[in-house]
Image 1 (cartoon, rainbow, N blue to C red):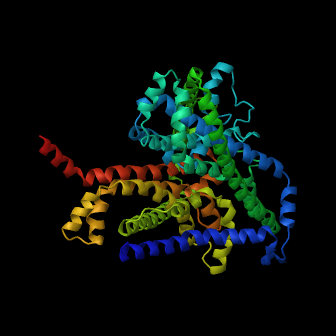
Image 2: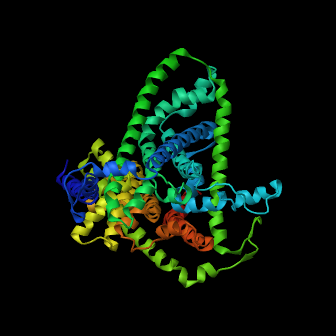
Image 3: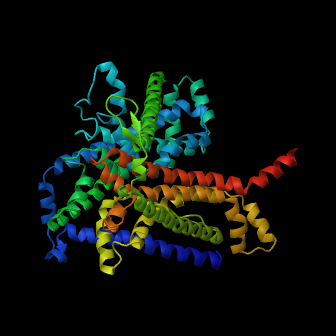
Length: 568
């Protein structure tokens, strides 16, 4: 290991530790103190279990806990089953590149924007009810709780429509490391059904490669706030939404049971991941017995077709949700049961009182700032690995995934208290810091594989010509990796735009963004204004992805011409 690499790695680790681990630790420390009765600002200075006793006696606590477990675990398991079944059915006809292009709209759209669109589609006055109206004789919206239902079905649907495409992309990427075609052909030649080949042979190899992303999906589903506020039950809501309400309640005494609930939320996710680990161990034992027992399993084919059909239907509903946002932002009069508006207007866009311009400027500033910081830190981290000639350790991988598998509600309120103590809470810099905690891991994950896949002959050739490490980085690595870097930046923009709780808590409610305003407006405001905010939420990530595609194409246009003339 050379000294440059050692010092660069050490500098990055110090920066990540100070900027990532320290805030999370401070947040959990402050939240944990309040959860056990230590909150000097309220005159509570002795350890006590009273907040926990108060938590379990709060109205609706048991129902909120049940809803969290059912919707979170249910959406994760069903999403994994649908994604696996769809991949098994179409893998021979799909490629990772084509799959990524097809799934980009679903990956780019923020959760809250998709949830608002789904509410427009699934509501009693939504597109689905309008489409059914002529056949069932409805002349007014039916009295059906299709959104905010007490079972959380709409919430599960919203989570699945967003997470199935993500898991599809993860699985398709993992399949590139496995000779799937050969193994499926061999299994089919022995008389095994395609579904059984996938269950017995393919997925045991895929699971270790997708384990961490599945945990991320589980953690998000168990602790989501913005989507649950829009689509989930409202009284009582899921536990994460209830905790958010208790933190923001007029009675400051609610902070103590809310803190206990935040710690409980972290324990739920820990236990959920532990349950998946135990399930993996159990499946290993059952799987060995099942393999020895044999069985051709031809009956699984209908299941694959059903999973494919369900996935296509879900994606279709998701596309309708995206289109509905734009239509509602342009609609002026749209009475039930008409499929399209009777009249159109740009008034929601041109009306200055709607305030979307300020929210848009704040969102753009936060997205650009957090993304630039995250991309710079990721490049520095990866360059340090190169110079040190060492790969990433397991603890470093865990460090990157840590912010993605812990509940935001578990530490953000405590972090806000810590920021208040040092005098930066409520400011734009504090929100940038808080958002970067979640943007950086996604940027790092997106950039790591392309960076490591770079052909080292280019770097070695530059070194042989006398180029130093810094020059090799600027003139060789960064130009070659421009598209992956911009793609990682586009992902960072999408993640920043989607941040709700970090902006709400750390911004102390004073920094309005498209997401915070859209979630607030979705609770019963004018659908046209809500559509404006949610449409802008979609536009920004798409603009990032479009830039990631067009900029390299423009800069490298001469290379394509040169290659074409050379071949000619």
